[in-house]
Image (cartoon, rainbow, N blue to C red; front, side):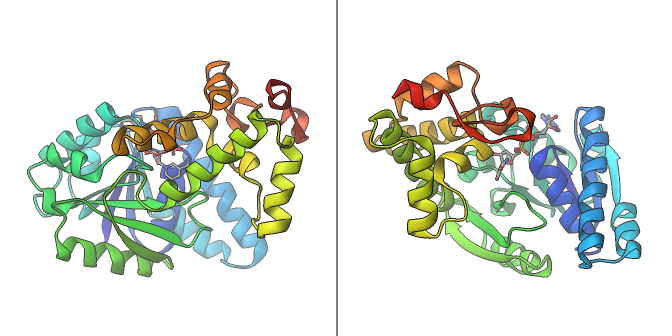
Length: 295
Ligand SMILES: NC(=O)c1ccc[n+]([C@@H]2O[C@H](COP(=O)([O-])OP(=O)(O)OC[C@H]3O[C@@H](n4cnc5c(N)ncnc54)[C@H](O)[C@@H]3O)[C@@H](O)[C@H]2O)c1
């Protein structure tokens, strides 16, 4: 396997393209938005500069990595000659189903179709293709070039062969793949997101303030980042969407999102990407913010 395509050049897509290209794969990076593609190449270049400064790669490695990436705005052209597609487009069920129908039509019949979805059912995505055995979840973590884990998600119809290929491929990228089955939230988000929701409830019920909750989890549990700050990094809208998937998927009220989280997302406070969540990120300073006032 040498040629791969990455669909979506946002936060995850650029990291996935960077990682494959760094390990010698030819990457076709595809996005409907030409500006997003330009931004992705700039981001990859800056991230490679950081690796050069740290001494983990050379200038020559940087050039080789960038030379391994081609940009496309047309999906059909971009996937024509690849053996693997990793889809990392916006987290939206209808969009993913549309993309996978197109991939099934335009990618080579034996190509593996992987999704980096955080929460959408791989079995559901596979159901719109005629190759369910070759559809799989390849859930990278952010930032992709740094984080070791790949959660490899087997849909109901995913074959052993596809799973083995993707597990081996992940190892070739210097990652540690873990095989899991396709149930809501898989493993990572089924455990992480309810913990974040519980942290938000703890704030909402005024058990403690933003900084205090994060400090307990950092210093008491050795988490590198408190759950409220982590929620800001993930995006509060994304946390809310994943809770809805857990709530719908299991029909269990324990996954009901905290009303404070719902209020914050409705008000447009989505965390780092909107400049404000549980902390305010204006002027590069991180300060516990208005969320505390809701409690
Ligand atoms: N951000 C994270 O921390 C994270 C972690 C793990 C998994 N994920 C998953 O990765 C996927 C991408 O998330 P992201 O944070 O990179 O999103 P993002 O919003 O940063 O990027 C999404 C990109 O997809 C592009 N896109 C939308 N429709 C498209 C189409 N039809 N064809 C091609 N490109 C299209 C958009 O233009 C955008 O550039 C989602 O499924 C998300 O759940 C995200």
